[in-house]
Length: 405
Image 1: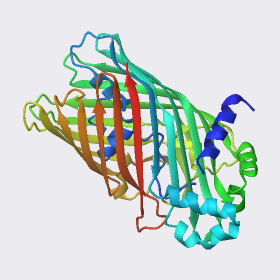
Image 2 (image 1 turned 90 degrees about the vertical axis):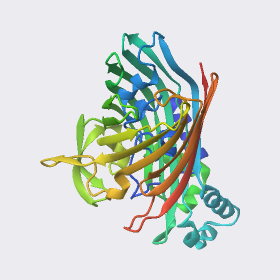
Image 3 (image 1 turned 90 degrees about the horizontal axis):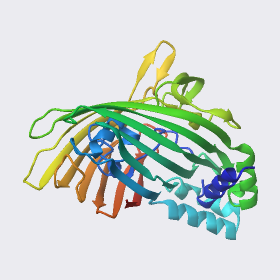
Image 4 (image 1 turned 120 degrees about the vertical axis):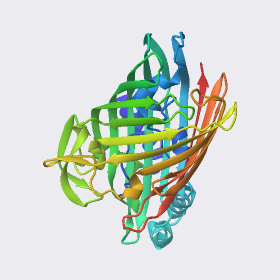
């Protein structure tokens, strides 16, 4: 087994690994935008543009800047967990000390206490290739793991552990005033993924669990392609519209079990190829995600402004038997809205940004702190993990820190 496989297995078992049937699968959740409800399609003014709208790569620099390097962050470490992870871990630890039955007896409590963690790095640099032609290059490791016990199957935990390793290369083209830009990104990705139900006794046996991951994980590669556009009307409040399509439909997967419609569909997007032990895993394809967004930035003073933004994600399209995105996602889960308090010029990155928003029906909050040497971001947000029509929030927190070079 290669050294990269060994590293990913060790990372997987270090954070107890499940699939949330009602959670929309997304490739990368950016920390800063999540504080503002992830309504970032028409904003996209920092390194997170490569994950949300590649046209925003141009927005990281001033319109007539002659600088060749606009932004460099290293190592871009991020980590997070949900508020119930400790309770889940404690129950498993007590089961290790006594028996699997002891964990099963507490399953009623654990159904409301899922486990979720995320860890990774994202060093990135945005620089000028030519006049009004900025580019971005970054590397990423994105590891997310989750586990949950359901009341109808107290002897097993649904486990998901997905590790993505790859690079992101983005290019943007802007007009001289920088109020209109288009862009695209390429994301070659190596994915190591496990999604299945696991007996609790196996979860408590580290050696057996490691062996299972080695034998039953999907190992695959994919190439994600994203495109986007941003236009700002030259008005005092900078009204802006943004459109992006993530995971262009470069391939389609037949008989994909849509967790929302609970039917088999031909879903298009970034389809992965490789060695699959579980063909039913959701991570075998990253579905196409069409997004539109609007934002305005009313000024409160010379050095203070608000930014109001609203997005709609995962807009469903179909052509014959092919689905571009996932059908029957509840409308509330596609809506995102945010408000950001900006200290400084709203068209440039200021030292402090405070955010609040709505993400899929749940409140979000967060902030960004930037200096000449480092940046810190934090976000608290909720995800719906219910498998029924009645939503249930899983509160999550993410933070990232980088040195700015």
